[in-house]
Length: 87
Image (tube, rainbow, N blue to C red; front, side, top):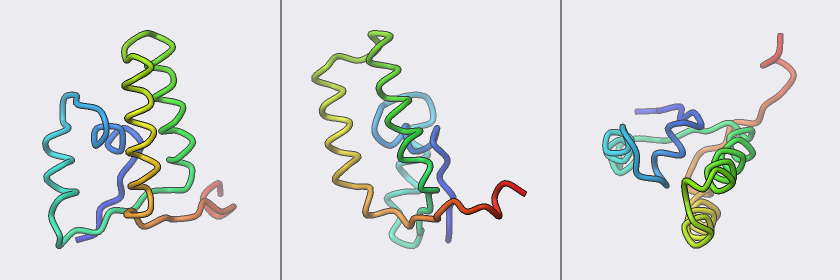
């Protein structure tokens, strides 16, 4: 099954929070394909760095999350954001 993963769900895969278990279950199912917009990469970094600035996560946690995300981003199907998305 195809799943579009928005940024809030994407963050749940890399930071434990309410709903993380459900998203992980979907992501770990080999029958599922996960799709993200290319914009999600920027939004993900923005969210994680905001958590760091607000001292919700440490610099060590920030490094771990960013490294894990960078290593796993290629496992997602990427939908490019084009002008048709803005009409």
